[in-house]
Length: 301
Image 1 (cartoon, rainbow, N blue to C red):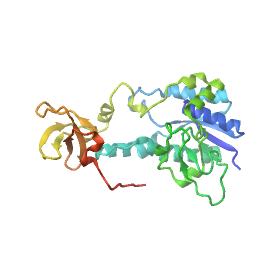
Image 2: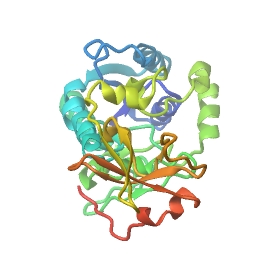
Image 3: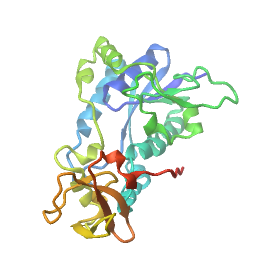
Image 4: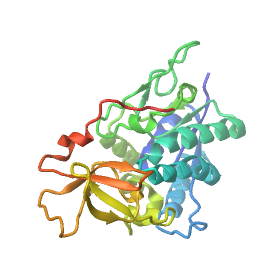
């Protein structure tokens, strides 16, 4: 029987309400705040981590649950961020949140929670559902868990949880998986967590910051390497770039006045070996560009 549960507390409304629901259901709830990035070491101050951590502590105090802080900086750097950079060096666009969930939130956090805090399960504020029940109430011997979409289609996060394993899912709870966002905020207000309910949602990678472009952030970790921009239809060199890590498939690229067009060039292929970015001018919508059509898909785990 599940009694003791860790709830990941980020300082936001979703994790706060998740913890409150767990406590209301009678679980012994422990709040854990994860720190995955060393802003001092990286010389950054763009992410409101201190505010988030303060909010996480305040939430646990308001809910009268134990609070812990755990550092996964090394695990995140080695398991997520290095792979993230390797992808951009190879001309691939990786979603860091997918790797973070699989390796940090649903593995490192689970191991810490089970080994150090002796819990039976771990909950998060993700908008997703578990076939074993969002509180694992339908767990039976031999039952195979399946990740299910959330009730709120606009907030569903199952894509970002696509790499979590069967074993990870067996010990995962999703308290707000059957709620819509507006109800979650309403519940937070009813609990007296007005500031958390009104807090702006964090989007994207917080350590990139709002004051600079993503390409500027990448430049700190991946040195520029000049290469050619090539028209994929004519094989003509039509420009120069500063590094393939600045491009993603489907991105619109501005070309100098030697190749004027009011239609626009779009990235349709990136060759990391030759350091060439292939473009195509189009009058169609970007998803109608033939060079972007692909039948095969490669999935690795």
